[in-house]
Image 1 (spheres, rainbow, N blue to C red):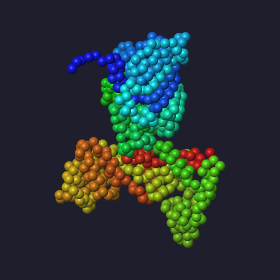
Image 2: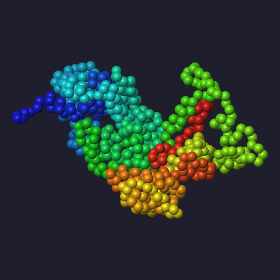
Image 3: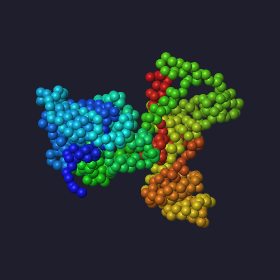
Image 4: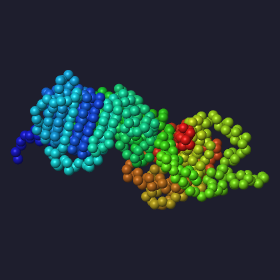
Length: 609
C-alpha cells in the first residue's frame, strides 16, 4: 500500500463533512461571518430547503479583492491573533468558506466602505476562479448554489426540503436571540417571510418575537454572578412548559451552544416543578473570561467545555431556583387564555350566536326549566320552603339572610387584597372559586393541598424524623414475597417519613404507624404503590436520592381528596397556606394548582371593554 498526499480539493471535501453537515450548517457559518463583520442587517434567501440556493447578504465591513482570494482558502482568517485561549468572535477556524466552496457553487461579492467598487470570486467544486471587479453594495453577499453537488453521497442523507428549511429557520432564530440589535430577514420560495426587526438590545422584546408574547408574560428574569461568571436571561414559570425542548436556548459569550451540562442543570433546576415528559422554556446567556471555556471542541463550534463545570452547574441551578422561589408561584397566563377560549366557544343558549363577521346562526334549545337549570341558586327548590324548613344548599353561611351576607362581605375585604383573594364558592366538590382585588382565581383543592403537605413533609424530613401516629389495629397488606423483601429493606427510610412497617409472615406487610400530619389515609393503597415504585427503582439505584419522591407519593395519598366539601374557613385557610408556601403554584406532579382570570378578561367576555 502506497502512502500519498491527498489533493487540496479532496482535503477540503473531507473537512466539509464535519463543518457543513446540511444547509443549516452553511447558513450558520455565513451568518456568524456577517455578525463578526459588524453587520446590523442580515438577509437570508433560500430555495429547495437551502440545497438549491442559500444567499446571505449583510451590510458589514466588507472585503477587498485581495482578502476575497484569501477568504476561500483553508485556515485563512482575520479573527485569530493571540491563540485559542482568547477567542472573542463567533468564527475563528477559517474553514467555512473553503468547505462550502469544495462541495457547492460558491460566489462571493464584497465591497468595503472606502472602495469605489466591489469585487467577486467564484469557487466551483473546489476550483477557484480569479477575482474580478463587480458592482456591489457596501458589505458582503455570499451565494451558495447546488450544495453537495460535488459529493452526491451526502445528498442522499438530506431530509425533505421542508425539514431543511425548518432547520435554517431555527438557526436564524437562535442567532436573532443572541444579537437583538441585528435585523434579520429570512425569505424564499419554500417559506413565508420571516422578518425580525432590531430591538435596540431589548433581549426580552427579541425573545418575544421568536417565542411569542406568552413567554414575555410568563418569564422570570435571571441575573446572577459568581466568581466573575455572569448568568443572565429569562426562564419561564413552571406552569408555562412545553412538550419538547425546542424552546430552550443557551448562549456562551454570545455563541449559541448545545451543551449537555447546561441542559442537565436546567432539568435539575426545575425538578419537582414540571410533569414528566414536559420541558421548561428558557433563554440563558453565560458570560465569562474566554480563557475559562474551550470553544474549539468540534468544527461546528456548538459544543463547549468549561474549565470548572461544577461552578457553572451550581450557578445555573441556584439562580433559577432562587428566581422560581421569588416569582415562580403563579399560574401561567395561558391557562386563563384557554379558559377564555373555552367560554367563547359556547354559543348563547336560545338565541343567535356569532360565527364570523356579519354571520349569525340560530341555536335551538329546549325550553328553560327552573328545576333542571344548572344555574338554580344553591340547590334550593323552586318553590319557597315551608315554615320552619331549611333550604337545601352547599354552605349554610351562603344561604343566610342578606344582612349576614353583607356582614361576611365586609369581613372579607382585607383578605380579598391577598394574592389569592377570598373564597366565594366550591364547584363540583373540587374547585375553589376565590375573588381577588382585580379578578378571580380557580383552585384545584386536591392539587394545592397535595403540594402543601409535600412541602411540610420535606421540611420536617430534612430537619428531623416526621411524627408518626400508631394505628390501634395494624393494617395488613398481602404482597408478593419480592415486594415484601424490598419494602422491609427500606423500612428505615419509611420510618423517617413517619410510615412504620414490619414483616408479617412470608407474603404480608403490617402497617403499624402512619405520618400524623396526613391524618386519615388509605395506608394500604400507599404501601402497594410504594412497592411498585421500589420494584422499578431497585434496578436503577438506591432509594436515598428518591426520598423527596416518596414524600410526594405519601402527600398525594394524604391530601384533601376531590369530592370533599369544604367550609368557607377551610377554603380560606388553604388559600393563605398556598400564599406562604414556595412552589404552591404547581402540584408535586408539575400540574398547575390554580388559574387566575383578570377582571379585564371577564369584561371582554361580556363586551364591556
